[in-house]
Image (cartoon, rainbow, N blue to C red; front, side, top):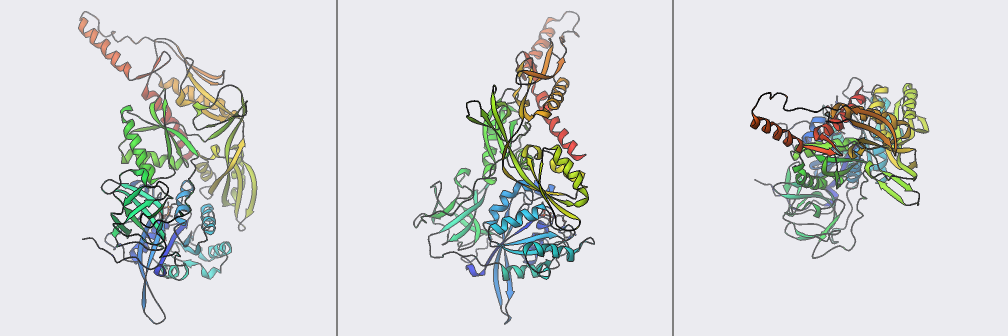
Length: 619
Ligand SMILES: Nc1nc2c(ncn2[C@@H]2O[C@H](COP(=O)(O)OP(=O)(O)OP(=O)(O)O)[C@@H](O)[C@H]2O)c(=O)[nH]1
């Protein structure tokens, strides 16, 4: 039976908060304990990382999507009377690629629990998330987690955090998400210190869409935070940016399963269902208002996230192209940072150019598409976005190396980031060496304590998106943490390396690299293709070239595959059958110039490149 809850909770009894932390400092575990203590999930139904719904999140032990959940919490006053509050908790991801999700969640809260691992102390994303929370004027509650660990140093790190947020070390709460110690006090502290939401209950309704997902049975489910007025079932609503109107079929809160309610009032966080199937009608950042009594001004939305890494995405079976298009449309609803447009490649057929926030984002999107939509996909080598100024001063934006203009070029600009690295000071030398190899400039360095240092570098984005973080971890025995922000762009000596088969360019293998690294790329790629492309009846040169200049070459020697060799003696119909079969096989070949290449060879070349980079990173 469905529980129908009474109408909206008054704002003074609401507290909206989020938990922000560096990756692995224990947000999801703490959220689990809160769900249990407040009784919204009973002990029998409890499982680890309760709010991480996606299989990938559970397997990798990371949070990708923000989740909002409502929990009842009663607090006793001096007279001993219990006041029932409703807490909305928003669990947020920790990885740099998903900072965008974090900033969206922050806009829906008034308070933030700043969680720090008591055995690790402050890390790069602790700082980045704290600054985001401060920009959003959130009330910060500093908390040390994992105090049950033998290696925990709560006193030392309480002082570090106090110095950072400007409070007394005694004000830093000490908890263990694992054992539950201190979590009750934390929930009480949230009620006492996080401000109640403000808003005008009498004004026309305004609610901010902060997330939406596609559900096969219910259509689009839109998550909102009501700022002014209220929303109730059966009323008609308008999406202010698209002007689309809908009837509200169901309104509810997540606790942690969906619970329908009679409405949502000022400050409340919940979901709306309109029965709409078209994913584009429910845009994250849009304002929902009432059709009969509409608001005049929309709420300030979110700025669109800017994709930083681009790569081609192709179905291995060409007939899956429409399925891939549909799948991307659906995923986009749930992942506002995803952008894509159709592209075709000589080597790989029909596919999409997809923009991602970073490499982890790329991996996650691809894995979700493969799992949730049962697709087999191949992605081309990722690259960042470049601005190329031509001789006539016009500027071309390049997201795909094969679009890199030929002929005379004035200047190529690439995105740069400001990276913050926190590490024990004994690793300063190793970090400097790595950053120098990656064309970095040291901007500054500060000691946080006698043995911990914060280093700031300017680095080209292209140099850090691939395996920089893994390298950094291995050079500092896992002690360094990294955070970065794209700050602008710089001119650089970049060239496009093309790979040619018998003089014809193979688009999927073109790459934009720094001049000093062009030769290494050319040698690596020609060598690999030589091993993968079957021999033909004529000699095939494989070349790497920068413009008209060839920088590396391999040759596949000629053979004639004689399919009739085995058929000595007479049966002509058998011979004909074999020749027919050979012709069939050729249909699955891609023809580049005169050269027949099985598509598998391209796929193998692209896949081995990606696994090699990963293997290198692991070493
Ligand atoms: N001993 C101990 N371990 C903890 C505690 N809290 C979390 N952990 C462990 O720390 C690891 C990371 O915890 P998560 O809760 O997954 O961390 P997270 O911050 O949610 O990670 P992301 O979702 O990826 O950002 C897990 O192995 C937990 O079991 C704690 O209080 N004590």
